[in-house]
Amino acid sequence: MRGREEENSPDAPISIYEVHAGSWRKVPEEENRSLSYREAADELAEYLVDAGFTHVEFLPIMEHPFYASWGYQTLGYFAPTSRYGTPQDFMHLIDHLHQRGVGVILDWVPSHFPADGYGLSYFDGTYLYEHALPDRRYHPEWKSYVFNLARNEVRSFLLSSAVFWLDRYHIDGLRVDAVSSMLYLDYARGAGEWTPNTYGGRENLEAIGFLRKVNDTVHANFPDVLVIAEEATSWPGVTSPTATGGLGFDLKWNMGWMHDTLDYFTLDPILRKYRLDLLTFSIWYAFSERYVLPLSHDEVVHEKSSLIGKMPGDEWRKRANLRLLYGYMFTHPGKKLLFMGGEFGQWSEWSHDAGLERHLLQYSPHQGILQWVTDLNRLYRREPALHERDADPEGFEWVDFSDVDKSIVSYLRRGRSADDVVLVACNCTPVPRYNYRVGVPFGGFWEEVLNSDAVEYGGSGVGNLGGVEAEQVPAHGRPWSLPLTLPPLAVVILAPEGA
Image (cartoon, rainbow, N blue to C red; front, side):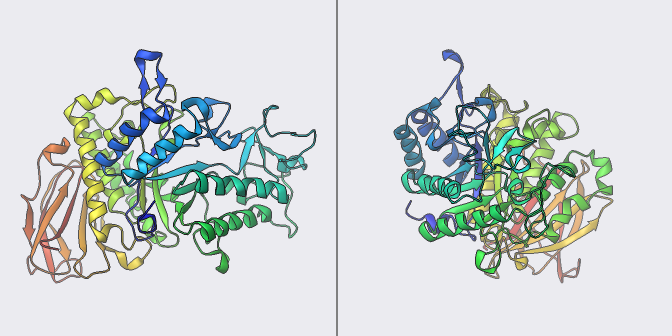
């Protein structure tokens, strides 16, 4: 836990590997059972360190009756699920991850609970934990009950749960699930199916007060812990301090970025010139909150296909598109989150009943995708320009987003030091571009630090032979420019030599 304040800082590189503990690895020789907490400790920690991730986020580990709920139907708010071992075994897993320098984030679900009769519902014969009002008691989308956050006892129960995991298990962060469903009284409800608040609005005043209380309490007692909101609307001030009227979260999932980005990358490259706005719009609001860019479990289930399966084209183009997507993600402002299996291009949609398709790592194309993610993580962590000013508009600068016909965008990322500059150019079509001029702020040799089309990543090997000397030819409003080679369906990342 030493060093957590620096590792969880808003200026720090945060790259999260999202994991479902029951399906990260199965043991097929033993009836396809899951690894125990202790069995997973060494292997998971080694894997995360090798791949360069800074944090692991577990889908809800709190006890839950229905395995296929992935933990989101939580009942045991003070107990890790016994499916994989004892509380001491889970402590061992966390301690081992900490020893290897990996932070641990848990999904926490204070928004609703399952309606099972053996759980919290109708606990003492009355509506104890849930609302008495029918239109506030039942969640129509999830068929579960909603906590009555107007009751002091219920707020205390949930607040104690949050503090318990941070205090007793030394968790480094909580990701609060389904915050949007808590903020709005009409969430998933039609006209006539909800009751306004005392002011006639749809805002859930009790939930707003509760979330602020959670964040204030956590930050007062554990100032170096992250609290992250899964919030999908334009609610203002999610990551603003409670003292200024915000909700007080440290980070918020950027669901708009995720939807637009995946919508863009699923397009045939022929059509991308018509929707380049999907790739560029997120910068308009990228600094309104402190964001996480999530490619989460929600995007690879329920017949949505795997990430690589969403990509258009033949197998080579699918892999190239996936590498391009990851390169764009890791150079875009915001912390990073990637669900397990995406790091090596798993073909199958995620199933909680099956382990990851690790056999794919026998093949060089999938080894290349994993190596690309690993190298992106390493560059992201060592290059201040890629993480230091994530929430600062001065940390990002468009070079050109107007070349819609070629579907090429280029931009600069900047750190606090004038020397910390990175140039990113994304070619979103399978047509290589030669002598493609991109403006830069100063001269000298610009080193090609990463190229997603490199042979070691499974690409075709088109590139800039290590770098390009800037020429005093004005372009894009800048006095110098680089005549770049842009590989097909690829991103190239350059930095001034010696910077």
